[in-house]
Length: 238
Length: 341
Ligand code: HEM
Image (cartoon, rainbow over all chains, first blue to last red; front, side, top):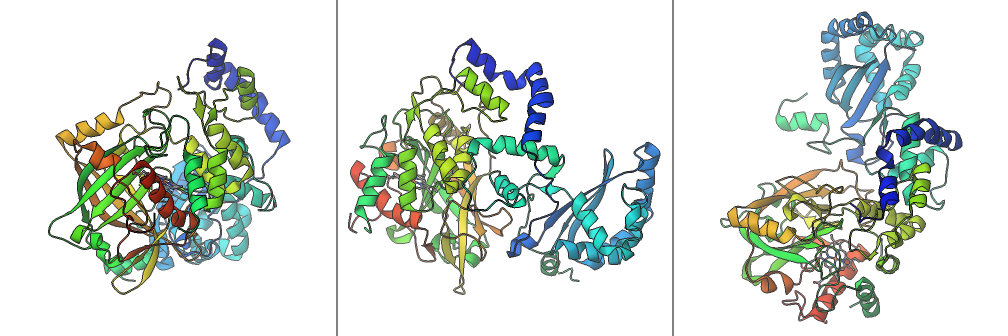
């Protein structure tokens, strides 16, 4: 809330909510900045860390674009999973590091959302070993999937594909977006700081490159514990 | 006192026009409340300090809520950091304090850099952006500085932002302070003790931890688009406690090797192990606010066996800064009176 700085000031304050200004911003201002300061798409998944609680309960938000987005195409994706429930449950039980996992059909994507412990590549590798058949079925239905079929024979490519389709996880604290961008751009951590006021622009430009993102690493009800520790403490063992 | 000149310089840097040397230089406006603290059943497994041991009778506490700014005139509705200072009353007339604020991170890693920050961020005449400057901001996809509040003549915003543009360590705190807003009630905000403390468990194991009070009623700010109300926070608390109680949980986050234990400009990731240490229940606003709030002197170094300060140099200097400030305004009882002043 501001004091009254005159009608022009009040009008300018309201610009971000005015249709014509939103139109101008969307079709002129943002494209100009995208042209001037393009941001590379930032990779998915959690960033590497050697600290214990950063390596448990990690989040995967895998968005796989459907080839056929019609109700029939969507139904095929649902069927592929519904017919493999046993494979999925047995596989996840055997991977052992998964806290929770679920599949969603959202807009034009079939999504796998999961919480797992440990290294991302190893998680995916375990996955292929244990539920590769489910992904094989899915790969026929998603864009770019054919080249990965069968997953078992394309493990490394599959891992790269998953990384590319897992959502970028924005840092937990807003200001750190600048540091993640700097790192991606090879800017030295000792370079002079960014202007604080540039943060909204940096965010907008990043969202141009990463349309879908995870807002931080999420909330945890029992942070810092692995699935194995929780099960062990609960006496439901492995 | 390690460096009396630095301590004095810091307090003087905090003194602003509209403040008073007879009052606190920051967190000037406040209200005292009383209540009880009950440790959670697991608290004793993590810390041997008296207030975390099971007791038959809950421990009495004195709390002072405050507005961070150093003005003697109340501006409850302005965006500002709020404070919550808690004194746990232990046996044999001893006590221990836990001082926290709504900002989870601090502006500077050392007393010297804090002095620089405090000097740079001294309130200056509000620099209202012209409509053209605002349009330029929008075209740069930036958010203009907020207009001053009605009647606001000076503010720290411009100086703090300028400082943060040159000193990356100040950016997290300046950014978060710039959008902190005003709580609808002192009991609808989450307060952070910010610094790292070391707690010792019954086996003698030390853990590096940070404390945080979370309101059971939930966090809620006023709508920043509504005109700010000048004075409401004290009355709100009086009303709430006249009719009932308000509660906070005390959460303790456990740091890990690799976390910054001695630098409170570095927030720990939110995935660290977190322990529920106890429940604070507020039940009264004492009538004599002079004794129960204004004259009280909290100090982050008023600790007790089982909990000790980290090596954070800012935490270190706060001991003397609070003592100096308390002596200057005639605060009683100063927890360190008896030690050199
Ligand atoms: C260099 C760092 C800091 C300095 C120099 C400083 C300075 C001061 C001073 C001089 C007072 C008045 C004390 C009195 O007269 O009793 C005060 C009060 C207070 N400070 Fe700080 N402070 C610092 C950091 C912090 C931090 C990190 C927090 C929160 C975690 C904090 C929270 C508070 C609160 C809540 C009060 C009000 C206490 C009351 O209600 O009596 N301060 N501070």
